[in-house]
Length: 207
Image (cartoon, rainbow, N blue to C red):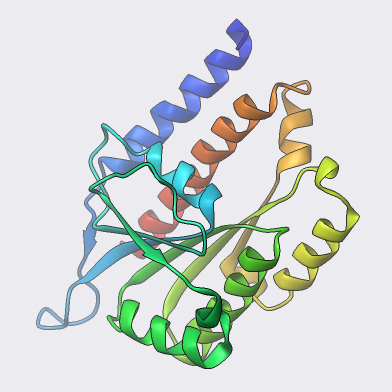
């Protein structure tokens, strides 16, 4: 990574580190009301890589990654929830969400869109969060152009299921161009830190 890109990357890292020094618990409502925690939810393998950028930093209260392909790399801060093919049915997913997200917490969800599994999980969880009146925010990573028009079309269709004010979108292709067509790995690293900076703003707003 060139000097200018590394400088921008480290700047993003500094912002993220500052964000994660914020108190992770926000007591909302009356003094005797249940304490909410920040629960970071990742849909798909791309989200696992986002969560790994938190290594060495003070951790949010809880991180969960849901996917049909669970990464071999383990991290004791990240709970991995593997899905089987039969789990992708709507009734099965609802039952899983009921178990994983029954607490009334602050839910911050990141999903890499473009693939069949990621899109289906994104739509199903968005509808479940809305139906159960949860406090949630979605961050969607849109695919690179080389992933094809079909991936982009599916991604845009999935976005329509989330309220505009609860959704942040990162277009990976435009994000890469912004830094002069940097290598894909460098673009993804910068995008991961950008996701965390968006969460910083949400945490501050909810505090």
